[in-house]
Length: 78
View 1 (tube, rainbow, N blue to C red):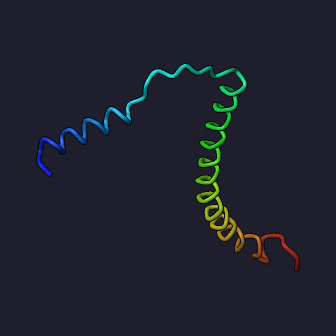
View 2: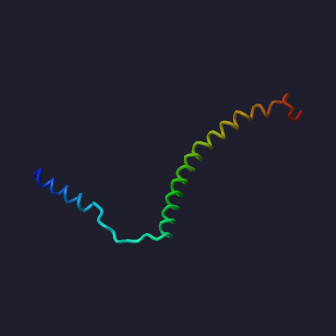
View 3: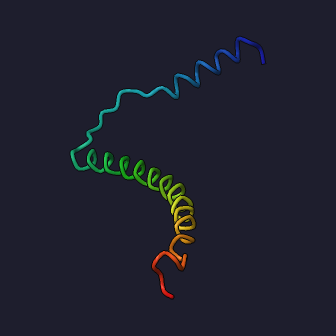
């Protein structure tokens, strides 16, 4: 394939991929639904990250606290 035909193929692909004028109406219901779906997806990703970070941190804190609670001189059971 020559450079000229590669250029033409690239230009044709760019023209086909470019959005045209859309004579469409996005009503308030669809708009609010789209916004809610976007924020729901973002919140799900953030909560997944927090869950992945928080669970090991909670186990580490519990492990550090456990020896102090089982100390017999600290007012525990005799």
